[in-house]
Amino acid sequence: MDIAAVNALPYEDFVDVLGNVVEKCPIITAAVWSGRPFLSLAALEAAISEFIDALPESGKEGILRCHPDLAGRDLQSGSLTRESHEEQAGSGMGALNSEEASLMARLNQEYKERFEFPFVICARMHDKENILRQLFARCQNERAVERARGIEEVKKICHLRLQSLVLPDNRL
Ligand SMILES: NC(=O)N[C@H]1NC(=O)NC1=O
Image (cartoon, rainbow, N blue to C red; front, side, top):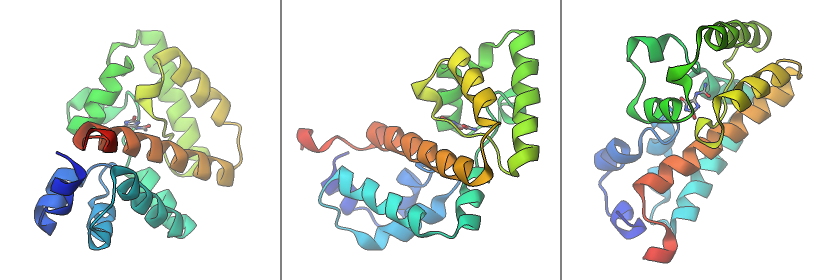
């Protein structure tokens, strides 16, 4: 689908197709629909990004809380969204050895206790060693730094999800 086809989608279809570009936050997709027509995929992505940036800090934390833990309960029970499942499987989250799995669970818990939102990272850009290293390092940050960092990662995830749904502008 190209950006012209995206622009032509009625509201319900737009949300059906693009509603999970930010994990479990279809309200963001619903909100940017009124900004169409988008001149390019980049313009659609910018609208999403601006909507997120305009939220109060509590709203940004709410977005982070919509993300499932990496290698967490939802992965074990098979209840991840399709997108999240592909991302987590691709970065090796489903194939942790028992030592890695317990370290991940412990650090995820520690992170959530410290910040009151989960650790978010764009899994497709990292392998499991790297994710564990970043999780360990980021547990040391201040809450405001981590809130901003998590939102940067949400935007990277969104970028890759959009790319897999909408043809890049140079192929129009
Ligand atoms: N917690 C977290 O980072 N979750 C995710 N990251 C990603 O790339 N997909 C996710 O679901």
